[in-house]
Length: 317
Image (spheres, rainbow, N blue to C red):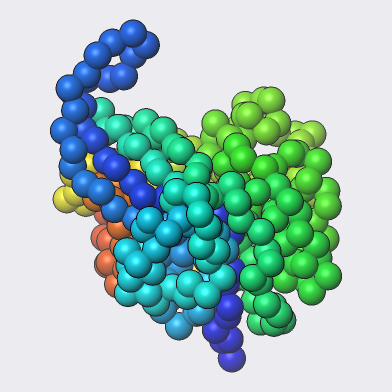
């Protein structure tokens, strides 16, 4: 019988300011922008929303900090999604801000001001039960390492999407439980100092890397079972969608992969749904505007019928 879980997502909570500019950002240039939207965002918010929209039956908690300035607004939006706020800390600092600049190619450049995000601790976290999942995004290093220890002690599944925040490559060797590590391709290069095509002697311990590669699609490197699976990206115009913003696509991918995997225990099926979800998100401005499950399944059916998604499996041995 499928068990619905407590899912703890540690990471940033931001107020997003989304600005469109003409052309592409270059050093020394001046641009005229158009304010498009202000909305709730941040990696923890976006991942939690994607999980909850895919399967509302899980209890999803955010572990993060905000200021008093946006408390009522943030709690109202999170609670409207069914996300639980009891472990969010309220500080005297300002809520984190993200300024998202969308160029004429609909690619996003993001500038963040951390604010209260740098002040989170686990002091408010109560007892974690055995039917739980821990997701560690771009939180503080001390918080991340404490959560890894909790997962190890309780044998809880771990999903890591830290960006370039707290992680060092040797941290992967600390993990003793089932683990997935979900960097984008630039974060993978930053952490391991090599390209994704050069992976033979990379040591990720028990963690299976799921690399988000943008227009190249995604890749899972399953050391434990000895294979690599690559999935292409989806040409979203072929499914009737118009690109609007890349901001939040990686977070949507991560959230939907997590929600699908804990239900199916199937990496390839979960990757398919994560890619479809990220593609749908690309057609929306807000970074947290991830699709609902029925939207994902409907588009996936079309993608498979029209052979728009290529899957390649290679043996590592």
